[in-house]
Length: 175
Image (cartoon, rainbow, N blue to C red; front, side, top):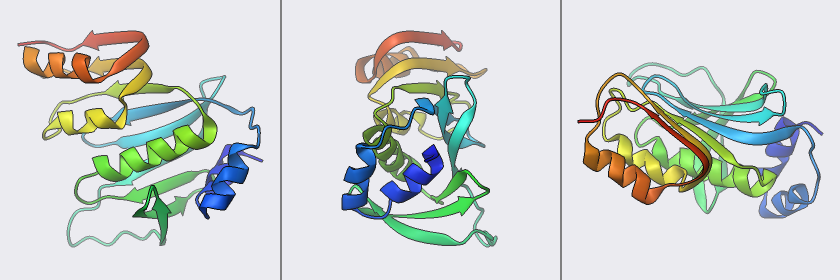
């Protein structure tokens, strides 16, 4: 089974999720979270650093139609609208507060695949970017990139609330 098929099956019910957890899927090796103001995505990656599956947040502007066909899945007791796009991708509907469904999906994928997280956070022009920090309280790597400066307090908040197991790279100006 591909990691996309395993993910789809795991979303069906609690019982299917527990069955899927027992299936060994050698394909994925880590989960990458990419947070940018124009692209908030989750990638399930293989050992060749290629995508097995991806999740992206639908940031549809008010009044515009999203052509995707969404289904409601219950993840962690919360209803999340998800559409299958392409052969191996998913779109999460989150017009407002994208951090909430993102956290639910990340927690679900971590639980199903038991994989480490690698995070790329680019806080430029993301309103209140610190609200995304609870998505990844523990990660293998955290890359903090951007051109706009963050405050020392914001950097301290990140350091205090994220356990980085391997690499923390802060390539962003600090005020």
